[in-house]
Length: 254
Ligand SMILES: O=C1C[C@@](O)(C(=O)O)C[C@@H](O)[C@@H]1O
Image (cartoon, rainbow, N blue to C red):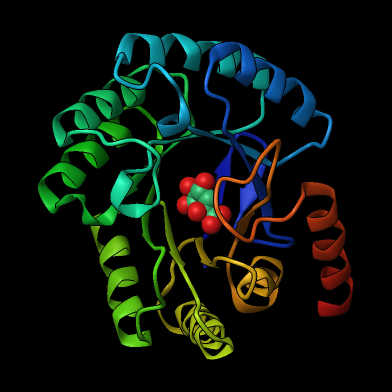
């Protein structure tokens, strides 16, 4: 599998990289959050801009993004506007989503952007092209907060993400049983062995899925989301606990 180098972080080899979401609603809250989380040395920050109060104002988003960029220093920064359909907190028109993403990608302030697979091929292709021009990596993502689709469906979605040119493909599902967690892990293993030619992330969310956030090195998922000041999705665990378990599993997985 090819690795992806983002600043000083190599994604796709060794211990899965820890991504911490920034969930503050104001610039001030976000600055405080970055200040306290930097001490925990995450591998990457994700700004969940759908949780930001002034989300309707793309000028304000860009300004705050500039402040976050300055504060995270050299830590890679992922910009995510999660739509309501896939677990986001605010309703946003497709038009506004496009405007925000174009602005963010062109700003020179982020290393990666999240784009949802189900937003439609036209928009995805346009944004990926712009991202490539601007040297921004693309995480193509898909989330199901209700259930775990069957393995064939997950593999189809994953292949589509690679085909569209994702630098990282990411799938998060909700398990309703232990069997669903096994489906996610089995799919992950299959992707690693037979499909992936670049790093990818899989997650089973919620309490039942916690094991999937810990075992990426064994099954193939290259990064995992920890909770920072707050969780941005169910099942995230705290960064130092997560790091301890990842390193423990790394020792025994060699
Ligand atoms: O896509 C993801 C993964 C996630 O949903 C999780 O389950 O950890 C958390 C989100 O912040 C992020 O955008």
